Length: 397
Image (cartoon, rainbow, N blue to C red):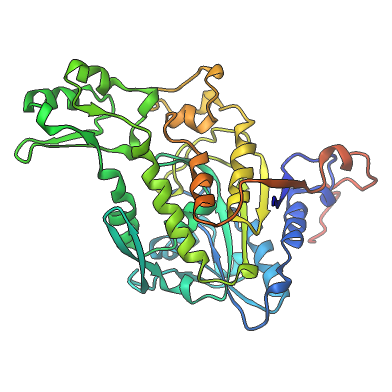
């Protein structure tokens, strides 16, 4: 059975407030139906608040509109993210005054408040689920979509599947799944290992001569767009770059997300993705980045898999803004006939955004089949009667 995904395009049929993206967001929230929330509910609004100079997350203007809709139900919302982002959130415009509710560290002030949760994936037995998120009665998963160096694409699943766990697990365990590499040490001499290290134009291959151990930073590997290390390996055949090695991060995100969603009643979980100001890498990079695809709009659903599938599909219809791609991307796929998603053309074919929804569906979080319900489409609203929206004089409204 397909899930409904509400979609508000950034495009509009006329210059009038009643067809603005803000109004479309209000109607998306109405479609999601917050009426299942009660006055006793403590509602976590999980979002990424950015980091240092990384301010290209969701503008507080839109955050406040969602918060006010939650408060209309009588429930008590609060925004939550990792402690570092919370502590300096005011630098990027996120305060209780601008957002309309408190902003709370997701795992306590020292990032240590959590609940040990069984994971049993690869060498990860448990992870610490962030305590504030675990203790909440309801969840509004408010996510900023972007390209991402580890998985190609990130939004709703990564927002909770990584952002919903304590700091040590976020970095040591979840990101640690990339430490695996298809390398045959028996076929590789130290001299050949040095050749492999030197072949990577990004210096992402490291070799420990004493331990005779070679690692590739898969999180930054451009895989099929590059493959210079494979060419350097030649007939030795000790190294392989395989798609399976890039799926592990998607899968651990899905497992982590499922554990979090299972702590909530299904009728008290809502997902909203902002497909705007989409950057080449994660919001945690702490810098202003160029926008690499055109703004699309906002999508929302009660089904996390459906909202991600719709987001990836909508982004897939766009073309990369080639003039804005940073020069350190040395291996871009410019072949339109390759059938790649725009973010794969950036990060390589093995970092497939659709793996997010493949594993989301595998772990029972929803369906990749969806019905896209567009809110106030431009083709219709341009025929409606409405006043233009501009300031004729000081109104203070």
